[in-house]
Image 1 (cartoon, one colour):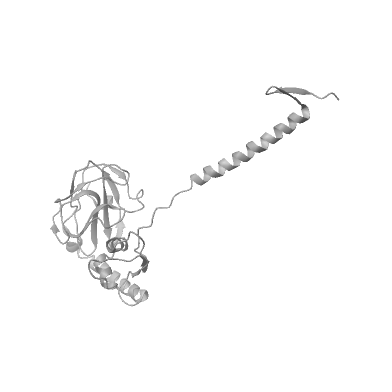
Image 2 (cartoon, rainbow, N blue to C red):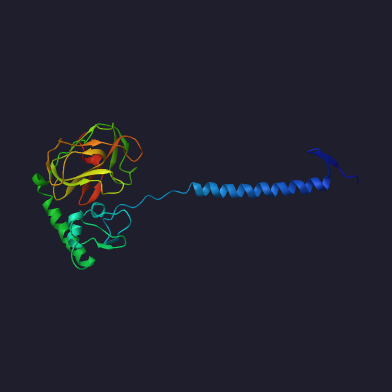
Length: 252
């Protein structure tokens, strides 16, 4: 049988030569498609955010960049309690690799028992509405650009402008004022009672000091730039050390 021929790139190829040529390039094309597909899927893999919440932990191993303030905030116990429980004196320096105890006493089991008893007492105390009743107000006027679920159940982000006034959402005592907590920038924490505290992060300037009493609506800071590079205030309300959705508590 006469062999068919075709013209390809200026060369005359026989039918069998052309078939071999096409098979070869089909294989190379298919292989490159698989490789690029794998790379594409790998690039779309979700990046897990750094875990901040330590409220359910009994011990914590200090990592680079940690401070006693940051661990105290993330655990819900505060730096002063951790300092006492771990016998750390001021200025509360931590060494990388040190294991911190996140409970009072000699063992985590005894701490859990005390926590259970404390919870019962707290439930009884909640009937005293005069002590626990708080009337929250918005710390700034703006639009919520990241809600409670967008932040990983860690408060909300409210838009605004750099230098905008930040006001206390309720009366209380400043428990922390500084920039020692990674991921929060210049931060204020106000303790309102034994149950609730509020946090104001990513400020440009802090206007109150630790231990200072503040009133609801009092100017406490100036807004800075948030995690997305835009002016915003990160605001949290914590109950028993655990973050709750601020929108439920804030006045409408």
